[in-house]
Structure formats: structure tokens, C-alpha cells
Image (cartoon, rainbow, N blue to C red; front, side):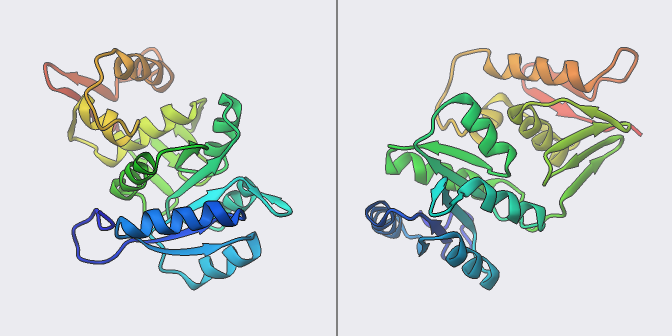
Length: 234
């Protein structure tokens, strides 16, 4: 389970957590699932380990000694660090989650949590094709700043919420490929079960209204009975 890619290599996780009991629980629980775990109890220790390299994902607590974990994550992103980061916190308001994602976190998990959910979220992050890629992503007139989390179409800034940005990034990376609702629920929302709701349609509708101005070609279109496809314009 510690090797979602199936390549035979062990997945290496760096846990940045100052609470010794929590860190020990994560080391034991994730280690038992096949992950290779290292631990830093401060930003200074984490910076040294990050510089050493070789991590597949980071798990970062927000409340670190002397510094909010979000500042640490934001600093990594500003330096072009693209390894997935999952933020752990006891702060559970919507505003807190938005702050975490905008700081550069790829996912956000509120304490207390089930180990199984943490493992599922880590595996979902490792499936996303984001590691080692350049910080800018382009398809036709659409440009995504993966560090600043800013989206543009034809030099026009798109005022996207974090989930809308995730959706657009997912489609841009799969330009010309049919994307099903099940794929979106699994890879964008991290839902590994069937969800009978119009969640995907509602979120896509909001994204489309921001992405396409009147008179512009629709970039995300429906494939009847299957899903959706993104086709870039020139």
C-alpha cells in the first residue's frame, strides 16, 4: 500500500509535526502500511530534510513551534518545490481550509482523523501527475500558475476558488481525453465511493461560467452519456 505507483520503490513521506505522540502514531501507522517515514519537529529541521531531497509527499502540521506551517509550505512553493503537501490541522473552518490550499497545500485534513482516510488521501495525491512538473501549465490560451494558483485565459485573470482551480488543472493535464464524473470524484474530491449527487455538474457549471466569456468557444464540453472533455483553443 506504500507503493501506489506499482514501481517497486517504497514511498517516502516526511512528517512535519511537533507533537511527539501524534508523530509517533503517524510513524507507526503509516510505517505499517508500507511507507518509509521520516519526522521533523520544527521548520528548521524540515527545511534541512527537504533540501536533502527524495520525498514523495510531505505531511505538515499547521501549528509548528514559532511558525504557522502554512508559511513553511508557501515558502516551498515560492521556491518552485512541487512535491505534494497534505496539511494537518485542528482548525476546521472553511476559511482555514481555503488558506491552506492557497498557501500551496494539495490537500487539507482536519484532526482528529482516521488513519485509513489519511492513507487514501496520500495515495490520491501520489496519483496526481503534479510531481516534477514545471510551475506553469499551458493549453492554448489557458495558462495556470501552479505555485501562485492563478489561472488566466487569453491574458484575462480567472477568479477561481481552490476547487475550481483543481478542476481546471485536472482537465488541462488531460487535454483531449474524456474525463468521467467518477474520475473527478476520485482524483479531485478524493471520494473512493459512488456519490449520487449533482456535485460535479454544479462545480463544472461554475467553472465554465468563469472560463468562457460570451462569444468565446466553450473549452469544456459534454460527451453524452460518458463525461466531459477539455479542448484548448488556439
